[in-house]
Length: 252
Image (cartoon, rainbow, N blue to C red; front, side):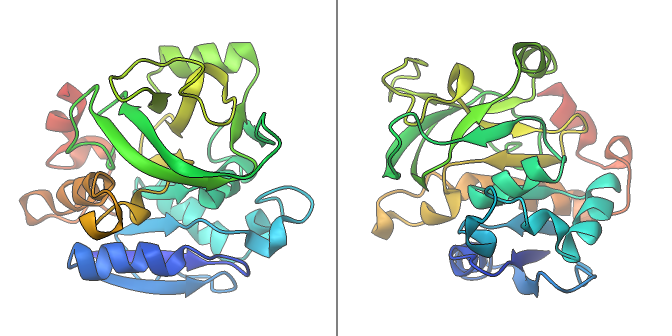
C-alpha cells in the first residue's frame, strides 16, 4: 500500500506522517509537493499538520488553490481515502471537501496538550479498526481548532453520522471541560457524505509509538491499511459498495 503525504510550504508534520506510515506501519510512503498535479498512484492521501503558506488570510485558505488539490479532489471523488490532520483538516474545510470552518480557540491561545477523543463512527476507512466509543489519547497543537458550522449544518452532520471524533473526558463524557478549543458539540473530527474523507484536529501521527507518550493514533493508520488492502484488492478507483470490505464497514 502507498501513502501520499502532501507537502505545502509551511507543513511541519509531514515527516511525522511519513514516519508513521513508512517506519511504524511498514507501508510505502512518498512526499508529494503541493505544485505537483499527480498523486503518483497513491492508495491513501494524508494532508498533514503545520502552517500551510504561513496561515496567511485564513488557515488553509491559500493551500486550497495549490495544484495538487485538484488531484486530491479527483482521488476523493473516486472513493480514495483522504485524511486531513490539523492544518490538513483546515485545508479540507477551505477546499469545500468537508463542511464548516475553523475559528480561533476560545482561549485565544495556542493549545498544545494531550486530549481524549471518542470514536463516534467506525464506518470510515480510518476508523474501521476501532470500536465505537473507543477513547484515544492523542495530542493537539493548534491555535485555530474551534470548529464551527451553522446549527442546521451541525444537525445534519449528527443525523448523517458524520461526526467521527468528539472531545471527551478519559471516561468518554463530552463535557465542556474536555473541549480544548470550544468546538461546537465537542466535534474533533468529521467525514464527508461518502465517508472516505476524514479530517480531525488531534495528531494521530504523533501518537503512534509509546516512546512519544501514546500509540493510540496508530489505529487510524492500521484501519486505512486494512480498508485498502482488504482481500488483497486495492480500493482506489472502485465505488465504496464494490470494495470487499464495504459490507463489513457499513454494518459496523
